[in-house]
Amino acid sequence: MKVLLSGYYGYGNFGDELMRLGMEDFFSKFKIDYTLALPKRVSKDTISRFNLLEVIGALFDSEALIYGGGGLLQDITSSRSFLYYISTVRLSLNLGKPVILFGNSLGPVRKGFNRWLLRTTLKNEKVYVFARDIVSYRYAKCLNKNAELSCDPAVRYLAKFQVLPDKQFDLVLVPRKVQNVEKYDILKHYFNNIIVCPAQSSDIDVAMKISRRLGAECIEQIDDINIVLSTILSAKFVVSERFHPTLVAAYFGIPFVSLENSKSERFFRKYTNRREFFAKDTVDFPKRFEQVISNPLFLKEKMDTECDDSFKKLYKLLIRIKSSTT
Image (cartoon, rainbow, N blue to C red; front, top):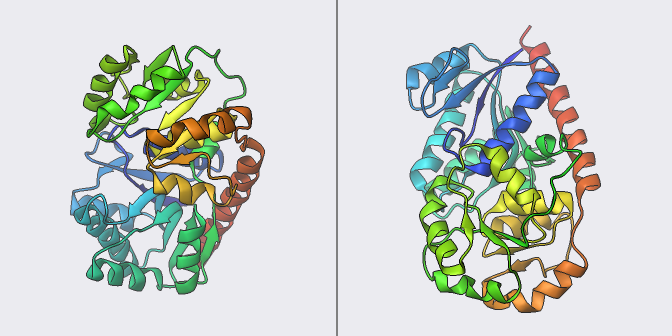
């Protein structure tokens, strides 16, 4: 069997590359051939996702399109990216190829036309949704019986780490927004050895500004996601405005606070009703710090079980798809 694997891959985004590695590990174990869609073609097993002829050719050569994790179908970041991903889904369906949204979140979608596109697309019986959060699952389930509550694909890669590095940093800070870098000053009252670790290239400039202000080290070479991952795993505490660093922290039992990130809140709702892990800003940090550090989330067992179940369901689905085409 062969599939086309697509997502927000190839841009140096820590979370998306972590999910890609999880998907590729699954394909390798079960000997599933795949073509990887990247910003540009780099080998015979990849295509440029912006080259329509290459995309069509890869779909013809595959038995399914898989979006391997992430919040792709939303227009908050960009309506243009939403239209790209939803158009590729519809192109696959028009070519008679099923689409699997594995470990995806859905929305938010603000524009009326985009909401219509999402709704009508999800109603297609050849679309299979493995939603990684409860909100997305409930929405998909209202439209399509082929909806499952799923893991995040990154968990499969995290499960490979049995021995963690020594704790080198009191705090790993993963920033995002460029406005008001002064808000992070409060963290100096709680932590001494701080490292600022951007999770994608667009965050490097703000990370450097914050590191200078805090007198902290800053990681600039983030192309190797294992460097970013090992940095997070070396932390005694994580404060993050990006989603996947909080997932890593929760998986390995590292105390964390997620700042201004509705994606994190939606995701963790299926694991806990504790709200102290989520803050709108650093002004809320003091009241959460003691609660979090004294009783962190440690979700490895739950996430591993969910991951194993989700990938088994994916494998069975691929077998059914393969059988229906032979």
